[in-house]
Each structure stands twice: as structure tokens, then as C-alpha cells.
Amino acid sequence: MLPAFAIVDCNNFYVSCERVFNPRLAGKPVVVLSNNDGCVVARSNEAKTLGIKMGVPVFQISSLIKTHGVQVFSSNYALYADMSQRIMNTLSRFTPDIEIYSIDEAFLDLSQFKQYDLTDYGHKIRSTIKQWTGIPVSIGIAETKTLAKIANKIAKKSVKAKGVLNLTASPYLNSALEITEVGDIGV
Amino acid sequence: MSANIDAIYYPDRTTECERPLFMIPVEAGFPSPVEDYIEGELDLNKHLIKHPAATFFVRVAGDSMVDAGIHPGDILIVDRAIEPADKKVVIAVVNGDLTVKRIRMIKGKIFLMPENENYKPMQIDEETNFEIWGVVTNVIHPL
Image 1: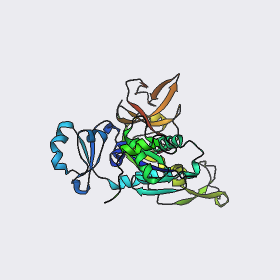
Image 2 (image 1 turned 135 degrees about the vertical axis):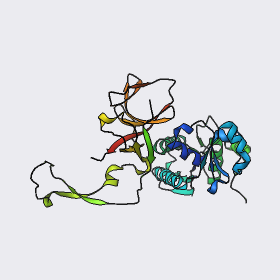
Image 3 (image 1 turned 45 degrees about the vertical axis):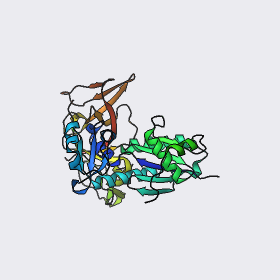
Image 4 (image 1 turned 120 degrees about the vertical axis):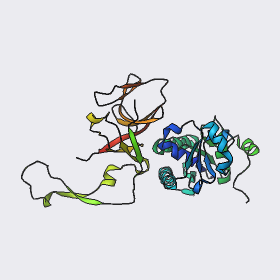
């Protein structure tokens, strides 16, 4: 039987962490800056829509910040590490096989759960993480980790997916491959 | 309704501190020999935090819940893993503000009830930007 992997990726992680403790930030453009407040390292969807790019030095967008009332935060790594730990602990309730991939991403091996509807399982994981920690996540599920990553990328953008895309035994696998560039490969 | 949450903290779960738990009926009378009554060790982290990944501490700022025993400056233990239900004390987000109130769900309508006669209940309607942030399980109040 083919394996099944899910990658759980937090949406705009640092911004989402700030929003848990400050609900007034919902719906507003928010950015989080790198150490010493140099560059933008996290953006809310609203900030992305304004055209603020990842890694841009903050002085280059000062007029954008002023015009659109962009909320700017210094990074608070103690907070992000705590929230990350909460998310990983919560994820480990859903499978014994979890590989923490970065502060805001983890692969889950769901092969032993293939008798269940993995799309439903993905939605259960997503709603539990949201309720317990307040952090929105996107989940891609597929038979390899690379395909899971592609599914995740589409899940993040597709309104229809509601944050979860399962490409195991999916008729959409080929079209998913056609429309996606695969990240994290090469340099 | 004014916001009445001062700050949110996350628990330090790295420490353990177990103290003997004395199962004595506490009366303001003559002290009894207690050795026979030690029930075991009690660690407040374990006793008060059932879901560490979902638990936060919140400091209270207002007095709208004094009749529920929640005073300004008290620390609330908030467990987001607990499903909100009628009559639970919750932290809610109302139009962007965090507030602590008792939730009532009556005939499909949601009310946030203060427990202080100087404050009025609030009905949550379609226009209210409303979300339940977490369920309050305990209050830490200095005597």
C-alpha cells in the first residue's frame, strides 16, 4: 500500500501569532520584522496584497506603511517558539510519526490512517490547531512528501479547499502538477 | 462594553513543584495531627493545566465579573481545548476586544453576561464581530 504524508504549514506564522494575542489585528495589513527591525520576515495576506515583498528592508516601504496603516511588529521569538511547541504537541495527538520540518511546518506520516477519509482527518487536524492555539494552518496530503508540499501550496490559495487538499488517489493530481512550481528544490 | 483583559501570558511548563496534599477538613478550630492525612503530592502545573498546548494565563483588568469571584488583577487559567458551552465563563473577542464574561446560549441566541449589577448583558447579533477565544477553568485570586 502506498504511504500517505501530510504537511501542516502555518499561515503567515509570525503574524498569526501576534493576532492570537491582539485580535484587533484581524483583517488589517500586518508585518513582522527581522532582528533589529531590518527587513520584513512575515506578512499578513492584506500586506501581501499591498505588494509588500518577503525580505524587503522596512525603510523601502515606509510610505506604504503610512498610507495603508500597516501594523509593524518587531519579532518576538520567545512567543513564536512557544506557539510552535504548542502546535507540534497538538499535531502529535494525530499521529505518532511527526517530523518537525521548521518552526511552522511539520510532516505527518498518515499511512496507517489510510482506511479513514484523509480529507476529513485533515480538516479535523486543522480545526483542532485553530481552536487550541488560534493559529490557522494549511494542510497538503499526498503519497510523497514532495506531492504533499504541492498540495499544501494549492490548499493555501484555493478557496474551495478550505485549507486542506488531499491528493491521494485524486483525479486532480496531474492538473496539480501542471499548475505548480515545486518549492525547496535546488539551491 | 469595555475590554477587561489586561494581558495574556503563556505558562512556563518546564518547572515542576510538587507539594504534599493534606486532605484535612479545614475548620477554624483546633489543629489535628496531619501526618495521617497526607494524600500524596500535588503539582499545581499538573492540577490546573489539563491541556498544556491549549492553556494560556490571562490577567483581568475590569470589575464586571466580581460576583463570579473574578477581580481586577486576578489571573485566569484559560483552556482553549474545552468546548464552549452555555453557562461557561469564557474569554470572548467582541469587535476586536478581549473580554471575560459568562456565556449564555438561549433559544439560539448568544448573550455575554457580566456578573456585576453595574454592567449590562450584551446580546451577540449578526453585526457583532464575535468569537470565543477560550474557556476559563480557574481563577487565581490572592486573599
